Image (cartoon, rainbow, N blue to C red; front, side, top):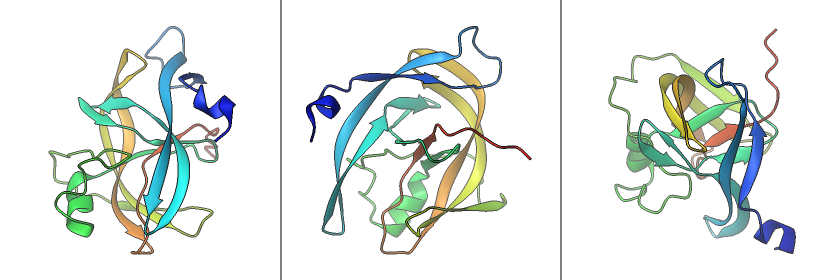
Length: 160
């Protein structure tokens, strides 16, 4: 691990989340964490935040504009009932019926696919509360022997 990565404590993110703040620059705590996935070791930068009061830490992803979290029931059903305890990305417990939602498929460059449903909630980022944010909840992930991730996408969104 380089010394530059060890000193990462916060990053300035210019995020456009509607017109909910006068200054769209947010300062978020980010952390360099070790990942252990099926015997493979890697590292990731994650950002700590809250979604509807639940602590989540999505992967800081500069290659995607998407924001999504891991749905708790899905992860517990797929891995184990205790899988959310200590899970690097955290789990989001949804209190609405997500089974009737349309599922979107997101293909990642490593060959994995996340199956998400849309949800709306309140985020707390860098000490600011931002209501009515649309984000995805992962309800499926392939291949089945890979561990799903949550994502804080920082890439520009191309609508059209």
